[in-house]
Image (cartoon, rainbow, N blue to C red; front, side, top):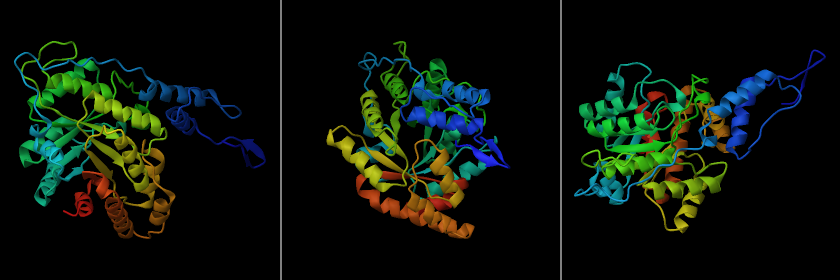
Length: 375
């Protein structure tokens, strides 16, 4: 940052955390060296080093070898037969899902009640993040199993490579399947620096591509070491897509690699710029290699929420026009209504290009999400 004149003294006001945040963003944009000059202290450099060390994008992921065929005398389950959610995607039918964040407590009753409301209103599935923004919450696989058992609606737990090594990842994925979970969304995971435990070590043995390959192996009756694991699983393999990525060419290349790794559907980051999504989808579909895409939609709750999404959430871009519109709201109810209106307008613009919508429940308010889904 530039120096400021404070009472006749020249001072640099940029904190180490701010410096580290932009070191991370420059690396994500493609930089391979970061540093500072005047005003940079050892504290600034230490903060940047801590961020870079835990940044999944700069780590070399382990290679995952995919077995060529199912175990002997076993058949791989077709996509359309894996779950009700997969059947709708395979049949070209529109799907609707609501994202509910697991609680910070060990009480799942409120989350289950919200899932039941979504079921009653006609939603197809409940999408459950895995330690979103690197925060400690109840295990999302446990939450997903409980929701399915107590409400009957299908769950789509996220499954990320940030917190577990290859051994634990395979064990948890097999355990999830054995507990009745079928649909998964495989993601690399937010870097620890953005969460409540910035000094936590991120594992990142594999990224989303490796996780998809891991699921393919289990669907063919093998673990990563090539050992049989009994009857093949029938995991529905979902991945994330970011149409507003800073390096769009890299994002498109990774999207193709995810498809090649076995991805069967994709869910995008929250879309606030419909044109960006359309450009992304037009580009990837020109090569004829694509999968069903479900668009993420986030009904903004306030101007502060809009600014947070624009500046602090990796992979999300909020256009100035949306920020300006939210800034003109004077009450909480005005903000909620504006957020819903914006989300509905975005839905209408992108509806012809996607196969459904995943709507987040801001602040846990599923009524807002259901209003956006028009259920």
